Image (cartoon, rainbow, N blue to C red; front, side, top):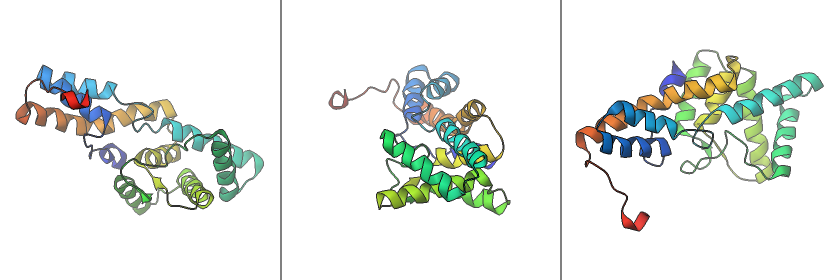
Length: 194
């Protein structure tokens, strides 16, 4: 329930929200507009799948090799840094440092229910290791937090990615309805942005 409500706050920086609004302005149909927004979501726009795959792999390695959380985190961070890849679930274009507000709300709710399990702890360890390696603050984003919770619930990454579309869907419905009720029909991209 917490995760299904966590993606509600979507601004126009989201490709899904923008696609929904543009489709709603043209179709005046909330169903097709939400479908357009769902199609504009994916691995880059907040899917938990990459972070889940990373957490499951790190957890398996931790168990097989008898590593501590800190040792597994060091291994993960070293691998991503050596490949010069971003670590999924960490970083945010708007919220800098610490934890994204929606991710923090998920953490509080899950912790209050006693659900902060091994994968959530592993995400925290990876986060701490990356901050130490970089010497600066890094944000845990909503996709990372959702990924850790879904891993603790034993969801498969593909299933969680599909369910996450539903999480964002609530916000997309709100965008579609608002655009149809209050927006300009056939929204056009200004020449300055084209």
